[in-house]
Length: 181
Image (spheres, one colour):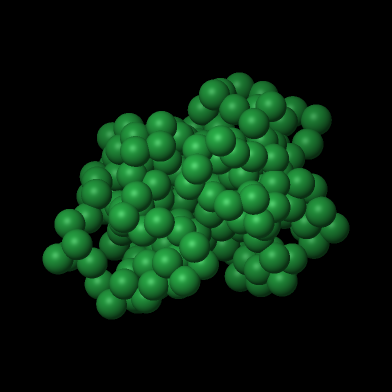
């Protein structure tokens, strides 16, 4: 599977601290896609990535954005390192910019980041059956990890998700090895 590049007229870049309010707006707009699914509460729908997390991700190079030809933000992806894995913490695309391949292009950037950092795979946690979650990631080369192959840090993330009201039975961990490129 090849790495997807941004569609014509879009570019993937970093972000600056002054763009955090725009990133939060994208996160909140993307979160509204979950309204009516019953998977997130009203409080969860109103929640967003904290400003401090964006600040840290900008500083550590774990935030990538996709922009249109005018430089306007259209989406972002946050990552972190978990043992010898790049964890895809969050990907959000402005729904007004959706269905253009921007999410797939951000995944391509994450795969490049993992390679650049010398990591063996990208891992994420997502809703298994929601079309823009599990099926989207499967289409982009990710495979569901059987529970018996989940590592301790994954179980810890799952526990945090459960404590925060997510139905972890609806979720799964997925991985894509760099060799699958």
